[in-house]
Length: 436
Image 1: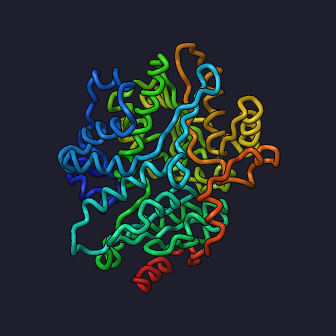
Image 2: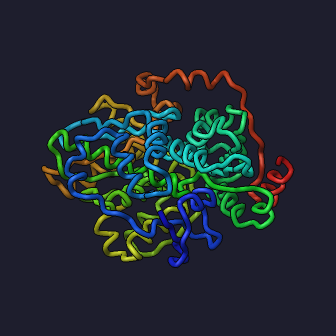
Image 3: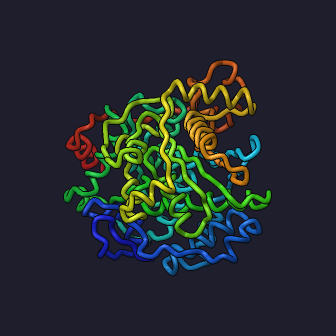
C-alpha cells in the first residue's frame, strides 16, 4: 500500500511509515495512491460472509503485501471480535449499533485495529512509540483500552476540561500503566491543535517517536470501512439492495470511511452528514464556503468539532469536485433542544434509547426521507455510543431504561489520574519533555 499527502500528491510512503508518522510534515493527511474497486462477485454476495471475513477481504485489498495474509487475518480476528448489528425499528428505518466493543463506542473498530497493527510493525529494540491523541469524548477511551499494556508504547490523551461526560472521563483517566491523561483548559479543537503542532516540532520529533491515534491516522480509517460493508451484508440477507447512511459527524472520520467504502464499490445511494450546532460542513455544503469556527459545547460532545481534520480527505476523494460531493452527501445540523426531542421520540415510538449523537443521526435520516421518499431504499442511521455514557442527558423515565454494563460500574471504583494543562503549546511541550 502506497500513500500520498493531500498537500503533495507526488509523495509516496509505505503503510508502515504512514501508520507510525500519522501526519506528513507538510501537515496534509495520508491517502491511498490506489483505492481498489472490489469485484462484483464479492459485493453481490456480501451476505455470505461474516464480519471478520469481510474485514479481511477489504483490508487485504487496501493494505496489500505490507502485512502477510496470515498475520493480517490474525490481527483482524483479535481486533474485531465483537458484533455490529443492524436493528430494524420500522419499515426502511434501521439502526447500526457500533457500541458493542470494550469501550462502548464505534471508535473501538479503529483503535483496536490500529494498536495491533502498530504492535505488529514494532520491532524488538526499537525506540518507544509515543502515541498522542486528542479526544472530544469517545476516542480517548477506545484508544486507552486498545493500547493498554501494549509493550513499548506510551499513550498521552488530551481532553477538554469539563466537556466530556463523567463516564468518558473515567475511561480516559483510570487506566494507569502506559496510558496518561492530560486535562486541557480549552476545547477539543485546542487539544487537536496541540497534537498537530507536536508532530511538526523538531525538538519533540528528535527526542520522541511520535504518532497519532486520532482519525488523522490512516490505520483508524481503514477498519471503519468494515462496518459499512457489514451493514450492507445484513441488509442483503433481508432482501434489501439500496441503502442511505446517516452518520453522526464531528471530526468526519466516520463518514470519511463510509465514502472510502463507497469508492471501493459499496453501492450506497446517499450519505447524510448529521452534525450538532458545530456545522462547518453542512454550511459548506449549502454555501460552498468552508469556514472553520470555534467549537461550541453541546449534549453530543463527541461531535463538538469546529474544524474537522478529515474534511481534507473527503475533499481529496472528490478532487474538489463540489457538485459531485453535494450530489452524494447532504449535511444537516441540530441543536440540543432538537436532540432531546429526537431522543424522546425514539424512546416513545420505538422503545429504544439513543445516545445524543445517535439521535441526531436518526433525525437527519427522518428529515431526508421525508423529502426523498423511496420505498425500496433502507435508511440506516449509525449509533456510535452506548447511552450509558450520557446519564445526565436523559429524563429519569428514559434513564431508568438504560442497562449499565458491568465494566462501567467498575470504573467508579477507580482513581482518576490526570494532569491539568493550559492550551498553550509551550506548556504541553514542557510536560512531554519533563515526563520522558
